[in-house]
Image 1 (tube, each protein chain N blue to C red):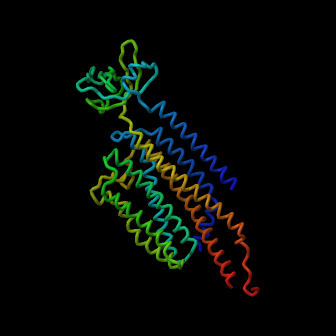
Image 2 (image 1 turned 30 degrees about the vertical axis):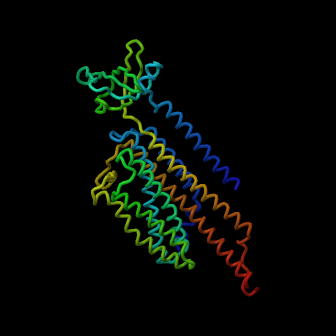
Image 3 (image 1 turned 90 degrees about the vertical axis):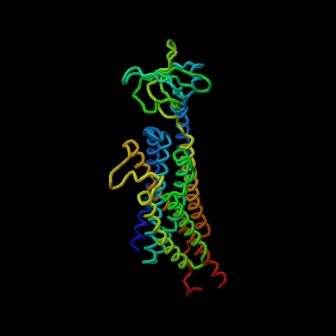
Length: 237
Length: 167
């Protein structure tokens, strides 16, 4: 139950995560929208990057949390960690949708199309479908333990999509631009890199804050259901 | 719930202030006027003029020197003298934004900077589509948590269960 204790400890600082995320995002937005320079080829449209990239990173991070939580649940059967995974999936869907929509808006002026069957885009859309499937699975079964087990297995199998998303721009010919920050170096101007980093860290913190709030929400829902169930069973007795 | 609404009220006020500042900045620094408006208003302050470079009008005054050309838009044409750094974008039939001042004595627009035609519509759409739902999503989650706490408190489901032997 080490992870459960760690989660409980972290939740004490929930508010700080929210405040730090808010501040970093505000500074990042100011730098990204006002002080950073437009791109030589794309012009002002490049500013979509400061919301699109952090949203995509957070979506992938959410899936990584879901994957880690699912593995831990199958090993230790810790319901707290299952709750965290369940919460991460919901938030993951939200960030995936933001990344796909902002990417589509960015694609229109740069690629002259809202959508193209590109490996990066397809693999990202598959992640959305896996996450939607995960949440649907969690509503189908009556037995909560079976539900958590099957959902965890689905999340683990679906994790294969993450390396595909990451390396799709290197493995296949694609319209999507290659990695700007990799082991080969940083291929992005300094005045664009700083707001991008601030927004990315801000989004990670926002994700952590949302995760804590949503985990709490799911826990309280389960608690209420369980207690009401017990009360009802008492009445029937 | 009182503190919850106060907190979110604060967030809303901050968001509104940022929005107003953004709109102000947009109209002050980002929007551009057309050549016919420039000729009509003849403003004395620095302005941004959006127009298309007339084909065959570019005349370079020596290597690295000023560049003269005609900028047209909305049925009017204005003479421009560009004094800034050499730009690859400065070419025939290119739609550009020239930043500079109108000279009322020479009737020439003296530009110091050039930039591409801004396409802020996409940027604004991307940010609004992301940030507004994000705020609503977070608000709903926090509200649900606060309501669940109240519900649990009111229904007294936190009361210790009766031991089995007392049933």
